[in-house]
Length: 401
Image 1 (tube, rainbow, N blue to C red):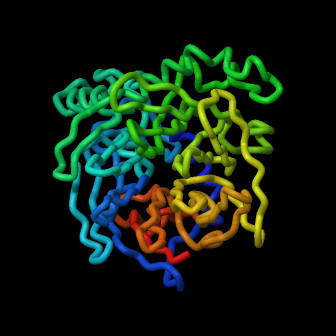
Image 2 (cartoon, rainbow, N blue to C red; image 1 turned 60 degrees about the vertical axis):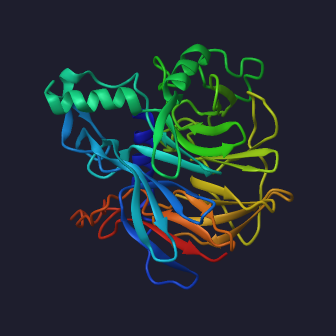
């Protein structure tokens, strides 16, 4: 949990000079606003757009635990999954009152959502192993409620039906956390020149997990984890299984290269029989079958298009994958046949875009201002460190490719 929030906020500080709040621009329109840190998005068969909202943390704070934003680590129950009628912009709650944990702006809560048939899958970020004890937030009734919810929700997958009834299923966060404990010194041992650094990863002390992206498939779901750096298959019946582990970037983070130390995969989607994953380094992994060792794919740019920090992705069924760039503020189109990448929206035209979904008419629906709360925040007062969410709230925008 710690590593992913640190990675996000560190990159956010670097990216605020590039990304800018959206304004009037041909080609896309705001469908809904006032969302709280929107992340994953997914369409249902009846055309409703489901949105995972990470929430806005809360008033129960943990003593001695700060955030990259400068405030304390706090928790509350503002996360959930919303349902949006894209024709009217009307928003209604599907699941509300889920745990949200974080700082003044950025929060971890509901991170992924995927709808397939009459089933709705939701994914909570972080993990319940690294949670501070109740004494760290005072031990009162409100504190105990937060800790109890964290144990039941953080890192878990939920499965529901469109009516809103749901049950908590596998604890993906705990599984991935233990996987890093068991494999931190052995992953890539057969190819150390390709996957260096796993044993030295400072976050695997003792382990780490933060489930983030979600994609439904027959018989289960694929999840990517920004803490364990894995792609995990979660069957509807049975135990999860790690399909792939993603190598750290080359070169790794340093004072001269201030990017996340490790991969931090953030998006996963399916195209045909392949699973496509991208990470906070803009790398794309195309996984066909089951292999724990994977290498990033070579991608050719058209028109100068590039991907730096993937925020979300979706496949259109025609061999194309659309990927948002959370810190560059753009959307790219990747054709899997030729592995060529082109612009859909250029740099700075969106502000922290995260989840991507494709409607039946081919238009894209993107969660924008994806690290911003549901209330407009004021200017920071510091021109060197502007508030990335100044005057804007989490929103959904429609883009015509």
